[in-house]
Amino acid sequence: MSGPAHKALVLDFGGVISRTLFETHALSETALGLTPGSLTWRGPFAPETDALWQAMQADQISERDYWLQRTREVGRLLGEDWHEMQTFVQRARGADVASVIRPEAIAAVHQAKAAGYRLAVLSNELDLFYGAGFCSRLPLLGLFDVVIDATYTGILKPDHRAYEQCREALGVTGADCVFVDDQIRNVRGALSLGWQTVHFDVTRPAASFAQALALLHC
Image (cartoon, rainbow, N blue to C red; front, side, top):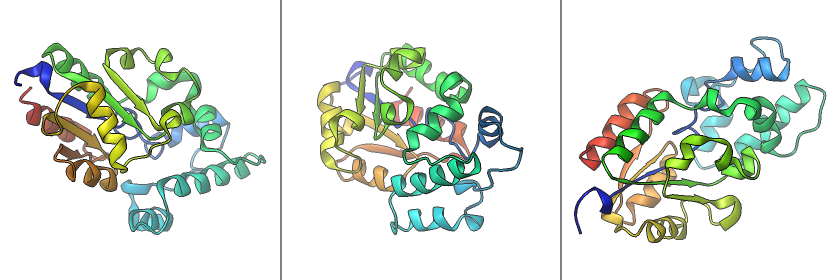
């Protein structure tokens, strides 16, 4: 098979389509009523100052472990006891999710869609973090042919089954999938199945999307 309809752009959501929580501290502080500068952890934007991020990148803790600790820290700043990241995400950005969507992602999705390529989201925690029915609240996601959310499947990247479920739903081969994720462990999972990949650089989103579109020949 050949042609745009037989190739697919598969995107992670958090960090790729949406800006990371590291990039939106000011918005989070405003939404939560915190003093500006209260949130100091910067993850990939200042890894040398974020020991917890370094531990996660070294696979000493999971991504969910990282965010659970940050969630608890932010809850304590508010005098509250938070145990689930969705509390943090929904309180910090739930009222206006569109404000944290990357303009580069919007442009890339529209470009790929207009060229006839298939589109998928492959996320570990879409509704888990943003609440049930999130796709219906974000018009951009209506452009996607497939949304695979481990909130419901229970299969987390980099488990091979997550990628295979997405590929089968798209009706394409692995070699015809261009997968974009900001976590290297997830990129390696796709690579091991013969997918084309882009390790998304959250500090250079335009360049990462340009690389993905080039792989699609878009």
